[in-house]
Amino acid sequence: MGTAVAQVLADNGHEVRLWNWEGDHAPLRQIDKCRENKKFLPGVKLSKNIVCKYKIEEALQDAKIVFFVVPSGAMEHTISFAARSIAHNAILVDVSKGVEPQTLKIITAVIGKHVRSELRKNIVSISGPAVAGQMAQKQYTAMNIASKNPLAIRKVQTVMQNKFIKLVPTTDMVGVEIGGSFKNVYAIATGICDGLKLGLNTKAAILTYALEEIADLSKAMGGKKRTAYELAGLGDLIGTSLCPDSRNRTFGQYLGKGIRATEAIKKMKQTVEGYSATHALLSLARHYKVRAPFAHVINACLEAKDPRVVFKRFLERM
Image 1 (cartoon, rainbow, N blue to C red):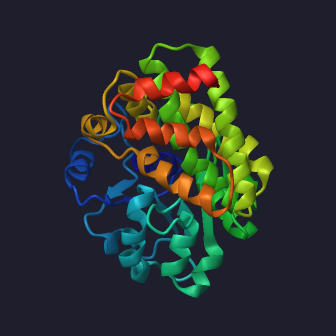
Image 2: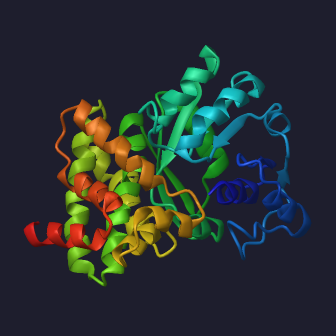
């Protein structure tokens, strides 16, 4: 997704500095050499406006807008050492969205904790149904953009929007972050359906339950329930749950074939956000006294020797 966002910005005529949070320089070297990220975005010819940087200080120097596109579990570490290099009055855009697994803080709050006080008003969150490869290939994509600062929203819209990227404003940062995080949990369940060769009837039913739980939790945490039915909620839930390329759906597909979660994680070889987000969701549900029975079922599948047995029992009594 980081490379895809960079491509969108670069295609809009902006110089984009790209840095890799993992410390792995191979994708950056590939981009420098052949204008392609063969590991994470194969087949997409990348713009010459994308400039790879191997040190975060160089990537951040005098940057007017900074896009954070790292796994939610890596945000605390990333922002803690990036903060000192962020320019005065820069706009900070959270594309990671969600909840930090250890502290259970939404990612925009994690960013706000580490940056200078004058930058906190400039924090923006973007979330919605956005498959990285499709974005980079100029397929129409609409997402929510959230901030308490209308000027920050407009500045991000100016650099990112074009005829195939649309950003729809909202002030509900909590709702956008919660929808963006916990859709990953429920996408695991649609993957289980695929592993069990269950059809659209079943998927439509479980996505209805999922949406209700996301909406209830968002409201309890101070967000707006209706945000769950907008792009950052329903849109992102459908996109992640039904996309063949979704890591969370693919992970769930392994579970639906009877593979234990620990083995499925090894097979994925990439971050599966929904795995850790499940525990975060249940912790928040307990804290805010929100019922989330479907999330408990998904967690039971993650802990079971044979996830198929747990999921089939759920369907029988659904």
